[in-house]
Amino acid sequence: MKFFIDTCNLDQIKEAMDMGVLDGVTTNPSLAAKETMPYRKLLEEICKIVPGPVSAEVISTEHKAMIAESDELIKIADNIVIKIPTIAEGLKAVKTLADRKIPVNSTLVFSASQALLVAKAGAAYVSPFIGRLDDISTSGMELIEQIVTIYANYQFKTEVLVASVRHPMHVVESALIGADVCTMPLSVIHQLIKHPLTDIGLEKFLSDYKNSQANK
Ligand code: G3P
Image (spheres, rainbow, N blue to C red):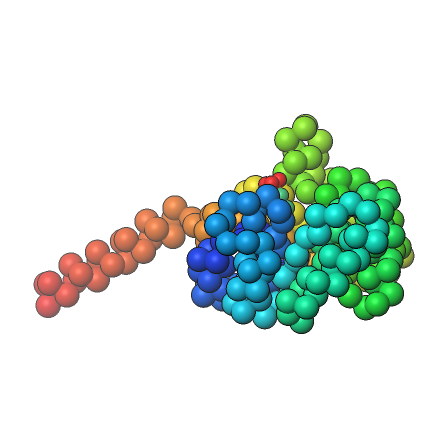
């Protein structure tokens, strides 16, 4: 499973990159709003740090305007993926961009029917927001199972990119189901490596070593 980081924060992206597990980045206008640099400049900097796919979201909601915006975004770097909201106008944009061989990440997906449509239109990635479904007492994980099954049934090439990931079990369960990608905040990457028994064990190894050396 590929690991993407879900942020526009350059320091966090560099840190995840240094950990050696980062395959790509997802961004959105809300994440960009947390930073001081303009969105386009952030995307330029992110693409210099990460060679893998970097999702850049359009803010237009009409087909022609989405395409015009995408045309500008793809000039940033070769690894830009265009993030398009899953609405009827967005579906048309996915088809147009896919026909031009421009990779699209269909975002704000909350149902299997939306996932089926964006795959048919040719999206490279589908982004189901599982944490936001959990927030309204609906199983985000069940949606991932449904999408993975549907895509396997029809051999769709669209990659399942699990988004709105809030904790390590979201990542582990996505991997068990066979999702292609998980995008997560840096805090979740840190949580994935943490185990109290590792910390206790390491502390004991180090103190045993120190004590044994003192007695020699
Ligand atoms: O990738 C989508 C993600 O940014 C949404 O996450 O936590 O705002 O639901 P969240």
